Amino acid sequence: MAGAFGFKGCQKIRGPQIRNLLEAKDFFLFDCDGVIWHGENAITGAAKVVSSLIRRGKNVVFVTNNCTRPRENYVHKFYRLGFTDVMLEQIFSSSYCSALYLRDVVKVPGQVFVIGCDGLRRELQEAGIPCVEEADDPDATIYDCALAPDVKAVLVGHDDKLTFLKLAKASCYLKDPECLFLATDNDPWHPLSGGRILPGSGSLTAALEVASGRKATVIGKPSRFMFECISSQFRGVDPAQCLMVGDRLETDMLFGSNCGLDTMLTLTGVSQIEEAQEYRDSDQTTNHSLVPDYVVDTIADFLPAFEELDEQSN
Image 1: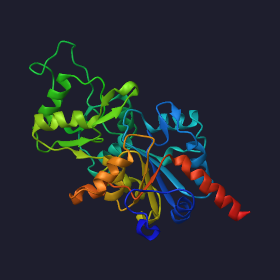
Image 2: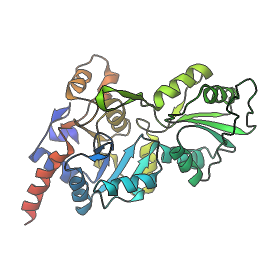
Image 3: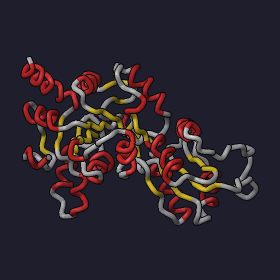
Image 4: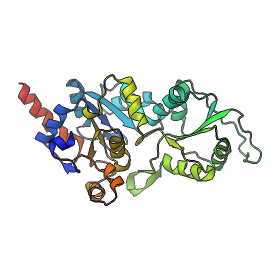
């Protein structure tokens, strides 16, 4: 569809081009942080964009690699930031999709050892996935700690309380080739205010991959599985009718490319247009999957297009 509009190759669009795109697409997938909000502050105009899409009968879902909170908490955050018409079933987080993968795809026959926050554990528990309880003595080491006998999967997410013991125990469980090795996502880092960064799930997964000599199966973006979760819960999802809107080339744009979706980069988050242009002009064809079809400064650029559509209908 991007080629039909003639703007493929990270071209900035506005006005009539955005209006044509809004009319052509039925399904809109949004990343959250950097697209919909920054921390506890909504991107200006984002709530109006989401409500306008929903009011026009468009399907809107949110796909996030943030695995630190269960979906219920996301609903509360959306409401708190002014997104009053977002429902639980519209939210697809890497923690929720990990729970679906363990329950419905591999039907894990034992316990899961989790490196991650309480929000990830809650999502697994709500899906009926048994997790290994952490009950080690504070002075325990890998030499004398207890290891659960029936661990059939290790799941790595964001864990701001990661310890050497957790890493060592996970490495021991993964010596069993029948034990699955999963990661909620492979995001390497996340931006913080003041130029600081927060190591992401991908950095923790990388440490365990080195220690275990194994590669993790990634559930979240850019893996296709998150889109398969959406397709299983919404009838008639046609990739050609979808638009993926995100702020990160290596996750959001690659996710869209992997799933056959048109992609749009918004410049309110991590990646900037210069990086996209470098990928576009690269001699390595694999880099072309990171190039967005469209670029906007912010999703608030949708608002004039909505106004044009309203004028046409009056």
